[in-house]
Length: 181
Ligand code: CUA
Image (cartoon, rainbow, N blue to C red; front, side):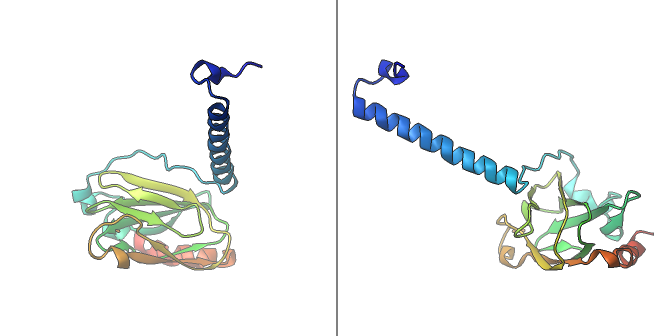
């Protein structure tokens, strides 16, 4: 087969290196792709806008409506506000192996939302509602943190995620549910 790069390059050694660099780039791209598929990593795709300066006046992100809510199908929706320098509510409790939809809005500047060792990671851009769909297979205490520099307190902007074994799901949902009535 005739080398297609012969048209742009006469030197054998140089063409060999063109091939090597192309193959390397494809191998590395492929590794990234397989890693992303294997770990269920995907970019957040939710586009929903909100007026960040009036979050407290919106129904969903009003202070009394934040937290964990159980949906009729048994999945959970977590509503949170990210603001300098914390997430509200500061502690979220969810059961294991339950689909969790996390909806976060920023009350001021750009923040990030990241639960280490999970696929839950998104930017929280003011003016938009960020959404992450995930579930947590292992019980434990996790920290979720802001991973976009947002000011002097950025380093201390993190909160707690408590994942409890699924049996106590109803207890968790009910106690959090009190906030919603
Ligand atoms: Cu919020 Cu960094």
